[in-house]
Image (tube, rainbow, N blue to C red; front, top):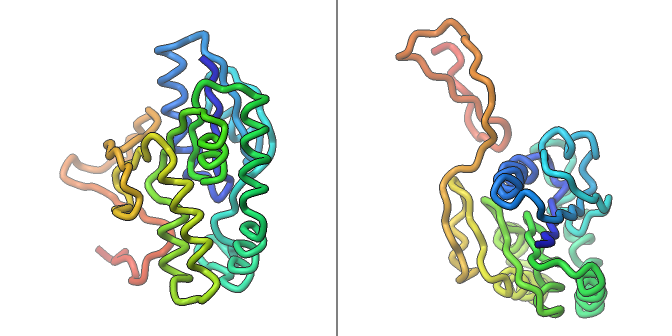
Length: 218
């Protein structure tokens, strides 16, 4: 089996979700062929993904143009989306030709929608895997813009073309997609570290997007 995987470079979370899945697949099907497309640092990919793979160092999504880890540059993001969809059918056709030449048996995307649209055009089965999708986030921020409706429709059509969107828990509701397959949390097996706490103590650390301060005094 030849599996083609597109991993978003918009932070390391997409890799953190995808890598344990690929490692599990390699244990079940040890001789499968794996091709990965991502512009994440090669060393970070190698650190997380244990199965042998061929790397295509490219990105097919950007998510949002970020000012910093938690602040979005909305003007730049809007301009980039409009540019990306200015000739969307041609981009999909190019992606379909790329996949047709690569000849994977299955396409897995976390969470770019272009590979899904290209796979549908090429007649290749595809799955999406993530706790979020760019279509819903795009709609959240840009739904009131007159130029956004056709772009959002193309994004939705791409996500809906997949055989399933495997929504990882916790995740967005994604009610607009119609092909959601919920699964539980995905995580790599790590090493337990003794912090010297009693069994009745727990620590929750959440990074980014929090509108209220953490009660560190407690």
